[in-house]
Image 1: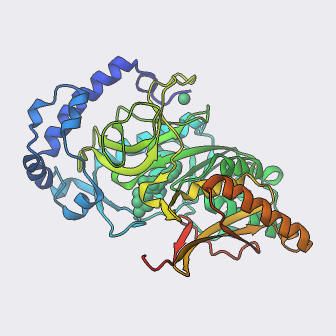
Image 2: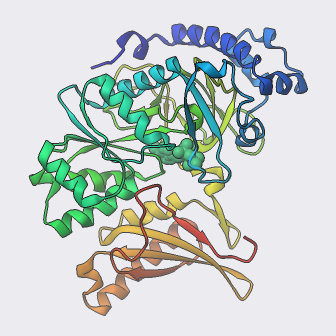
Image 3: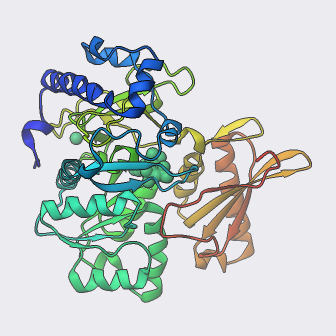
Length: 433
Ligand code: ADP
Ligand code: ZN
């Protein structure tokens, strides 16, 4: 049931003692890097004055901008000879950053991934199809090394080429998938096209869904249509990649591995800690990374600590499904909106198809939000009255969520462009952007 039982079920006091010791070490280690040496001096922090976990709050936050300022090598705490891998964030939000790993870092990461996959029920006897991009994007190689360490037969199919992916699933009896949720939804139409019913014609058991925000409705749709149990996988390049937090079989929140990361949740504006159970920005410190330790890294991802102990027996904290990044939020008519609010509404309506996109415009000096929604073919080609009624239902449901009336445009399946990578949910054409 556990990959590393002693660590996964470690009593909380022991886990905190381990964290304290590792935190003291990692801060000392970070201070040997060119960037942190001056950064800590500038902020007047004494690395020797860190006695408890709580003392971490005296340290400055590290942001993506710091990583850019220290690009490429200033965060290194080892010789260049000792780094074996460079990853770079996919640059969804601006200039890329460089993250380095030693051989031990790569091994620790693989082990974390194996821990996550095993927790979800993956075993050596499984056939694992890794359907996300390899390369600088960490999703591909992160899962790949974890699955091999676990001992599963690993198919590094990468992203795209949907029909070929389906052939592999058939020929090799793929039982585990790693797939970006928006791409999983898209794949459903390809199954349809090639006349394969994943539930009856394939051997899929488990899907790991990660790399982008998605709602529980999206998960349920994928579970039903693929005939799998789906697990939420969270990570970011700055903290290795996937493997930071992962759902257990309870499928309620993701365990965040506290032997490897110190977890804080802070108010996104005041940056003060928020009490457990309240939403805020996730801040992470790497506790064991060698090449490039990061102290109090602001992920910009919004989540909540779930306070109840988990029935699975793991003692590591759980975080709620990520609501989005602080910078995903857009303001329309003075209202703050997250793409996940739109998705939650859409995916709860059965007639809604597998893709959507939000477009923001300025019309006569006013903001407008148009939600383009793909609907299933039989509905799109059905009678106009039914279509109109569906449009009204969606408009009303969205209004209930965002409190203003958006425009809703129902479109043909496949008409919104879809890449195998992370989905682009919002296109902002407004003058101020
Ligand atoms: P980039 O920052 O360029 O997108 P990454 O590939 O490192 O590069 O992406 C990490 C980010 O992806 C996270 O900070 C988070 O915003 C998002 N993400 C990853 N996994 C999930 C998940 N399971 N749920 C929601 N968001 C996720
Ligand atoms: Zn659990």
